[in-house]
Length: 324
Image 1 (cartoon, rainbow, N blue to C red):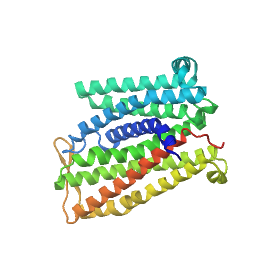
Image 2 (cartoon, rainbow, N blue to C red):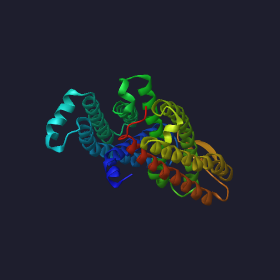
Image 3 (cartoon, rainbow, N blue to C red):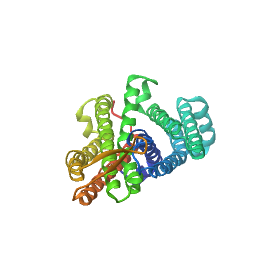
Image 4 (cartoon, helix red, strand yellow):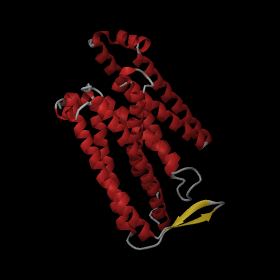
């Protein structure tokens, strides 16, 4: 793997990273931190909104570079006729239609973000982001190898599910580290809120992983054919490394879910109290929470860091042809 190949994969990496962040903010807003849920967490939502804007911005930046790369790859011609080739790509190819849908989806998401920032109506914004993520996951699948047999085939739908569930898993985890945990106060109430939100994140990540595993096994059978192919071509070698890293993500995830989180609940002696018209407020008591919280944050950071490496490899795979 050369430096030129890494640079060539950079637009795809930025594109995938934006999808991961968007999936993370959408799933966090909808399932980890729904509106009107836990008192003392209101200041997290503006942080999630800013990360959503950043993800949309990244996707806008990546889009033209991805279009240029795809045009040059499909035409097998040089840069001298690039303008004409791009116009032909946009007006007369399947990818041109998919790319236009990508830009249209980003425009709609931008308008909904502007509307939320003006009117502060959270549920229309959450719904629009969730629908946008579904569309963007389909777009990634429709522009990849899974769409060779046509749109909306079972193979492409499973590939889209794989992209979506993987983005939710890593995205929710990354957004929790970047936008949720830093905004929680270092008080007993803030620590208890951290544990409750972490439980929700853990359940969401478990569902996402199950979908990743099932769809990934199907994709492996479709694109590889036999296990021997994993060591015989560059695509297989890159995929093998990706699978190894995904397995590596499971280690800190398992430690967090089955060891650290139960101990946090036990040491925190968590209890819920209804206040302020039924909204949930949390308190916590018990020694040893600070050290455990620090351990959990390090485990989450390790899992997320490995996940970013997985995204790098996925970006490289987008430019490789599978054996099957």
